[in-house]
Length: 200
Figure (tube, rainbow, N blue to C red):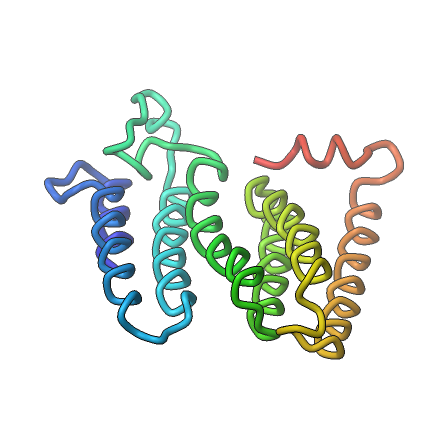
């Protein structure tokens, strides 16, 4: 929570609070220490950490002005002065997803695999609707990676096949709707490459 609050102050004016990366590092280490001796799933810590980091970036993305571009961004100033979805949103998205993706391979659970797919689909939807490159492309990357993990060794071992196939069918239908809608919006003169270039 302190990460998001500090990020909000940084985007509005200078602050004497520790930089966001420092607060996140403390929270990350604390999460590892708290998780190690307990039988808890990694999502108890990765999701809140990533969510607050994503919120910090989203606040900066929403509140960024042309004046911010005049000053050089630094690690200590993040998310202030930074622009674009890759710099502001990608750290939070990766933090939310990466632990669950790896855990799908090492500790396969049906709900975890479905959670990763839902998060990836949500990122694609937000990226497509808001024209943001980072969530859109990261979601497109996560979908096949998660599928490879599941189908390579996990189906029938830790992940039930029926819920997984239902999830895939729903995901496929939603992606098809997105593709058809995007094609109608862009028209015949614009291709997929042009649409990706328009993302920020």
